[in-house]
Length: 118
Image (cartoon, rainbow, N blue to C red; front, side, top):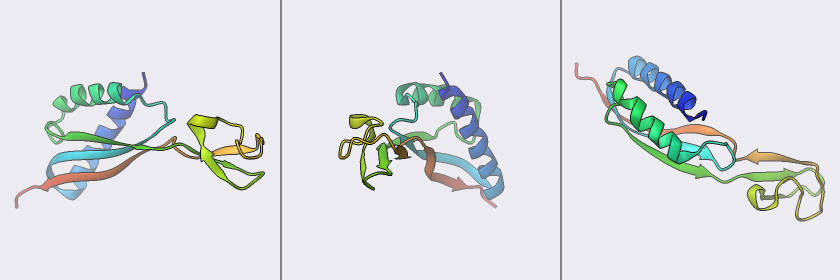
């Protein structure tokens, strides 16, 4: 279960950002998670809900997860296709000369926060 490690890294990133930007608290975080990233979003959410309680700047923050579809590129026929549906073999030309174009990432897309009072 690598979800906890990712949540710990995310929390450190958010705390650093809050300190740099003088943020009082973070209200929500929107993550884009790749369809084939290996992140189990239910576990990730459970880890987030457990871990955020220990950090005042994110204690009340909502986590929003958006899925990034997995798309594979075929070098042979120069087309893209749905990775999960077809795997590593191109459904158009049968080539195995393919690579994952998107769908393995985990990216912070948006943070809603409240600035500290002067």
